Length: 224
Image (cartoon, rainbow, N blue to C red; front, side):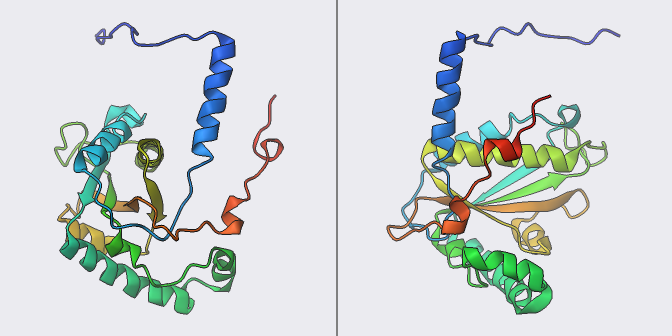
């Protein structure tokens, strides 16, 4: 059986000098993306969040099954529930469950068990991976390369939020099963992947000096 295909009619080929300028401009923009831990409570229209999630939904993925679901949370009550559950886990984490090596690695970032931004930021986005369902979300069809697919989509979402003019922070409390209950998702087919905080930075937001240090091109690239 011959599968249906559409012509590629929306690709734009730029002159190579313009390509380089576009690549440089993109790098300059993404260099301004920083993870922050102090957010303003200034409201962000849901239409902006919706457009960014639409962008995330274009990410490449296994068999085009799109094995993800995003729960955008602005409810103060639900954010308070999430903070309570997350901080309980973080207390155990910072009290020793993480292990000395991991805690030492976190010290330059100045993190701790207190997560006020989970209530203060205007939006939390809970990202779920779907191990079954396919495009029709039938709960039965096997999804493929789920972890990789959802990771790429999350990257698209972070970039889209940054491009729109918002700051973000990734948060991964372990275990994250409480998100399934609070967000009313299916335990049989979905698993929490990440919690993303999004909003405007507070006036006193800072960036840890440790976080500004990025590996050089020579460290991250090999050309053969």
